[in-house]
Image 1 (cartoon, helix red, strand yellow):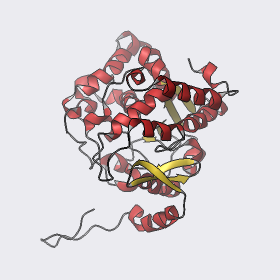
Image 2 (tube, one colour):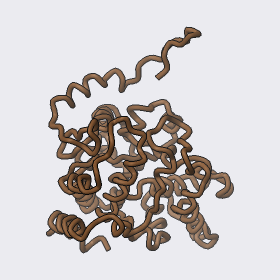
Image 3 (cartoon, one colour):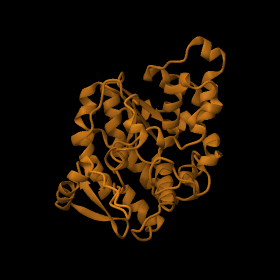
Length: 338
């Protein structure tokens, strides 16, 4: 926010979010709270999921004010399940005709999160970023559980893609990612306590398995509108899934593009290895469009499948695998997601 400075610059008017923030905070004050992963960052229960207060304020605002259009496309996910990669892929697919060759693609200069804005973060807190002011942009993202999405999204008929990941790697990625947050909310709890909370559903946007199940059911009910992808399967062989994603988005690759290797170039451009090694995503470099609590490099740790083996005990693995088996029993989910 701008304010009156020494040269008497006129303060900018309050945003729609700022006008409503006090009301959101009053609502949140009445909701159940639980100790979080940091001492000054409690979780707040709303709609069957747990939230950090700023994210819940953003959710309440997006539920009321975000207006989806039929041609919008949503990248949906739980944190640390492949979101950054999927944002890069959707942007590269939708915008490939705009760039003469890969060397001019803005993904090589800026972080993927700058091109696919979060409706519960960018939309309320940073409404003046270029991508939100660009009416031609149709790509948006969210970690919001399916049952709490703004009504305008569900009524618009727009499409969405959801990516999920083994909960063991999801937890480890969340816990290591949280260490990189520029936080004033106190030290993180230890991995054992964080894992216990995660298994209880006490994590931002959690419970994780409920989050996955909500989008899985939406996909089963309407596969033409909700594409469901698994991180591990895509990492193993991305090419067919990138082609499938492009077709689903309405930007299918032509036979000529396939012959010319365009699909392979998109896969390479958006690969974990390419993005991690870009200057824009190294060290303490920040995104260009707005302040952030994470450096760009925080989004690129390992991207490996099975890194949980370096962090979790046998008992931890048994516990989380048991929870997954119990949650998805009878849904057809495990058999349908190789």
